[in-house]
Length: 95
Image (cartoon, rainbow, N blue to C red; front, side):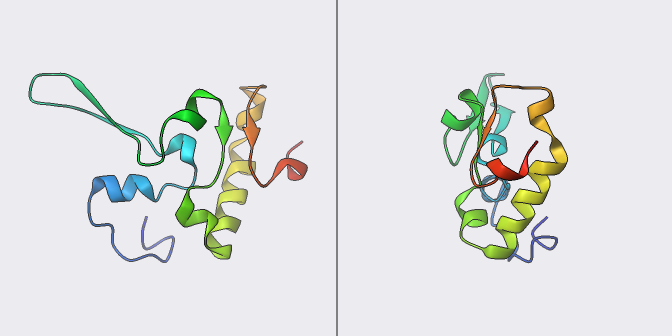
């Protein structure tokens, strides 16, 4: 994905998750050695819990990546499944 987004290689799996396009999808779960779930959420879980889609800081900071974020969100049509979802930066483009 770093190549697709014209970014340097990610330093770790968590760094890769931090470079997901949307804060609400920038989540990962793994099992620890005791079988307990560990949640990684570099940008927090508030947007996921509140059904709010916003670009992650790396995508918000780059005009090229922000365009990718907008195209991706429009293509996903999440609002057709979750009618309470809100979006940052593209409200007028989603119907």
